[in-house]
Image (cartoon, rainbow, N blue to C red; front, side, top):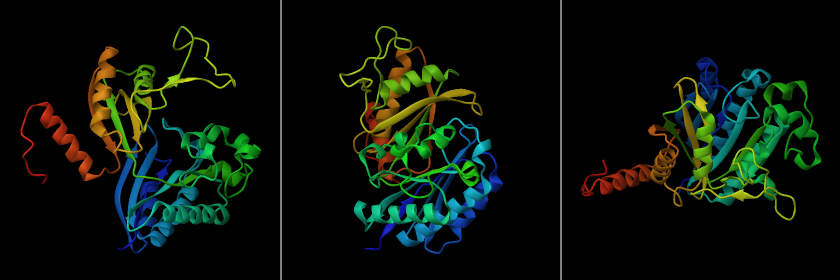
Length: 321
C-alpha cells in the first residue's frame, strides 16, 4: 500500500491573505502533495493548513512552508487569542495509510532536525515524537508562549530538541516551532450567547479532561490545593481525550469554547456538543452554533447524524451519501 501522511501546520497569521497564499503556494509547488484545506481565523490570527501526500514529499512541502512563514511573519508584532510561540506554531505529521506511527515519528524527527539546522529555528518535539515525557504535551512545550521564549531557551530543562538555544534577532522574528507525529485530531469550536471569556473558560474547564486547578472555597480566588509534593491538584473534567479553553471572538461578537479532540474513538464530536449544551445551560447560557477547524473523518459526521436522528426518534435507514 502506498504510504500517505497528513500534515497540519498552524501559522501565526489569520488576517493577511496574501501572506497565507504565499505560504500555501509553497505547499502546492511540491509534486505528490495535495492541499486540502486552508482555514484562517481573524481573532486567533492563525491559519490551519491541511495537506496530504507521500511522506518525503509532505516533509519537503512542510519545510518550504515553515521557511516561507519565517520570512513573512514577525512574531514580535503578533497578537491573537490562540496560544502560540512561533510563526509556524505547530507542525504535526499524522499517519493516514500504509504507514505506522513509529515510521511517522522518524519522518517528524528528520523534519524537526532539518528545520532546526537549516533554518535556525528552535524546535520542540511533542506527542509521539517527544524525547521526554514532559514534552509529550504541547501545552508544556508552548508554556510561556512567545513572550516567555527568551527565558525558556536558556533554561537547561527546556533546551530545544533541535536548533539554537538563544533568542537571536532572527528568532525574535520567527519564534519557535513544535513538531510532532500524532493521531488524527479534530479542532472543534462551540459558540455561546455571551461575550464573557471567563464564563466560556469555566464551561471549557467543566468539559476538558484536564479539568481545572482545585481551590479551597471560591473556585476563582481560593487557595490552590497542593499534593504532598507541592504540586497543584486538578479536578478532572467530564470528557477524556479533550483539550479546551474559552475565548472571545471579536469578528463574531461572541465567546467560544475551543476544543481539540485528540481521539474521537474515545470522545466523539457529538458528545462534546451535547456536553457543551448541558454545561452552558447549567450556567444560564445557550449554545448557538459550532464550527470545525480543518477537516474531520466522514465517519465522525455520519455518527453524529445518526446520533441526532436517533435522539429525534427518526429512522436511521437512510443513505450515507
